[in-house]
Image 1 (spheres, helix red, strand yellow):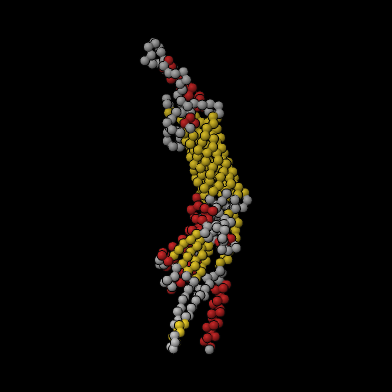
Image 2 (image 1 turned 60 degrees about the vertical axis):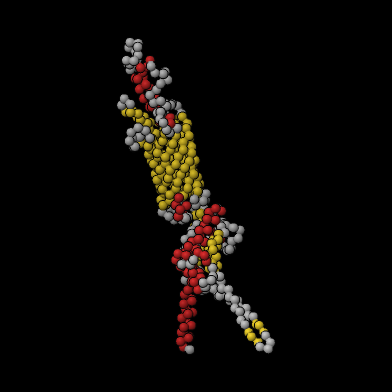
Length: 394
């Protein structure tokens, strides 16, 4: 009797400790927001000579809006200076100014690949856009072109039958050395693609590096070529978010609970014969188990706190060789798009299935995977709890 009391006391103490061993998980809810950028750096205009020969100052101002953790858009105004060079009768270099407003699509590669997490140190974005380039102050190119063209036209030629004739008598009147010379103000379409890397300083402030390649029509640098003209920008600067980028909330994860009671249905049939009574007993058993595996926002990885539930499902399947499990994935319909939620719910269910197969050796024939996405049916009233894969084994 004394030993029984000791065991009972120990069991109550252990149960109390387990009940208090709750774990809290911090989740981040994305908030759409505006942001501004200011950057300065260098530009390299492609031309004759080695890369780096035509470096020029460059600057950019931008305003953008991030719609969700993965997609945004911005309006950028890039400006300052481009350069050209011609190696003909010596080396001749010139510069001109421009302003280029563009509209860019912005894809957050970090969140797209690794899931949403605003506390990461680094954010990497892919940028692509279209706009116009307005060039002006091309006086240096015109001065060089006029001087070289005049010199060529005055050179003597032995092919001219007129004594003392010059090359100028043989070339068209509108001939010029550069071939695509322009003056005044010139507007061209520009397409661009690039990448930026930003580092979080505070919740609102980032510093970063942007690399961008820009393509324009052939006459941008005043010279004739067989393909489009290009310039490349390398910019460093700051990025500031207006308003909160995310909201934080804490969810309490209950500790693993003991296996749910086994449901046993017993059917007893009695067969009576005269004059001898024979009793025959037929037993039909149906055993079920349900475990809900919870996930964090935009995540498909099973948390350590949920691993015990997966093991309980695996143990149940091993103890009941005829049983099977149906795993149904869900997503919170209040967060993300329909396509994203459908993908998340399917991946959550498949992650649990893969864990059962690879870690515990459960055959795939005993596992059925379903996904509900953000359907109208949500198993929980709390949106956070609908980021779940529900496992029912029987």
